[in-house]
Length: 171
Image 1 (cartoon, rainbow, N blue to C red):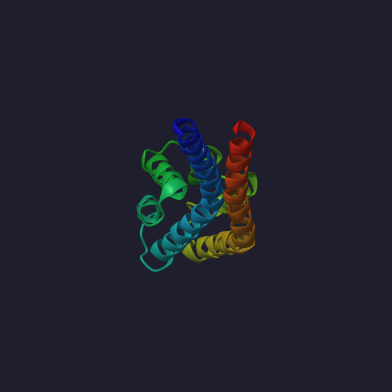
Image 2: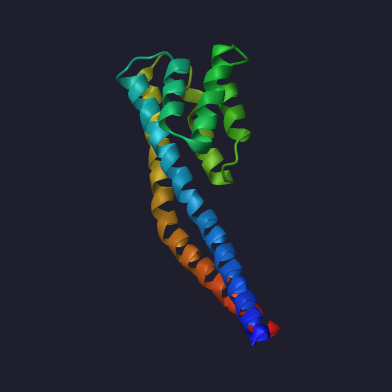
């Protein structure tokens, strides 16, 4: 009797571990959605601060960093500090901040694309460049939603199924 209880307890722990592993992988699949949302919010805040708030670039970038969060916050805050400390041109500093981030390749390319508009006195030109980056992020977000949901569901299922398989193999 004790042996059966121990096997059931061990099996339930293995099943729970499989479920937790699947859940962890599902959270990773959904993390891209959160990252894209943070980028969109930060870019929108940057546009508002440049276009309507008429803030200087380091202050606008810091405000965007505060609005964003996560990786977006790191990129925008790093760029703001670099520009404030005069570590190069705004374009070089922005490209360096984006290159040093954990974003995917296409996201880095899209964010680096408007680097040439940074530091120019024409706020309208910068706002247009930010709009194109926002459009890219929104498009990526739209494409990523069904993929993330599908992958998250699959990872959760695979985790439980692998846990059940290990249980069956051990019994």
